[in-house]
Length: 284
Image (cartoon, rainbow, N blue to C red; front, side):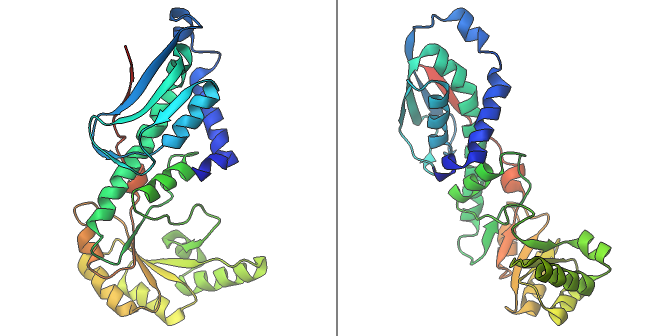
């Protein structure tokens, strides 16, 4: 997992350790002899896509470098209820101290990967690419967007810094679509930046305004119903990339994909994914 070389991920793990362990796992320290060795294993309690295998290894080793970690799955594998995910051997105290940290990360990331897989499968017959958004857990964005990719969907911008997205509030504050686009080009030129530019539209009239001005890479069609989206895509006619956003659900995403839109952004990939149920069990 390349992300484990990222200092932000290492810092996140350290924060999680400080948050959970603090001055020590006093429950385990009070009940279990320090030299007692044991074995535990992780088992899936529902079907899904597993994520966090390598991250779990990193956390266990961070807690106790002598722990032996034996994975039975790889990140991105499909799993079913009852599958053994990994075995872990070492000091009982160390295993229990790391347990919740490992499960919290794995369950969250596996839930995102599972939902992303389900949604990507729904639109696999269309050319549409499903994107995530910035609606992520603070501090967890890199991991959550990685889990989205494991499930077969794609990442939108990582943050505010790697793409220009002119949304409705930007347009309103700038004084209109033309002014927002002009100001954006002036800013990019002044800063010497080469960034993709996307602009949000709310009506067919706004789409026509953008087409008349140009100077962008992608048009976002916000809260268009499937019929209106189809009209907008035909109107744009390949001049710019198209992206549908707003209120799109599992039940309706195929209708949106059928419009011929290039991208569909779905915030629910990250902000509404249910954690996958995993359990760490002590081997008797």
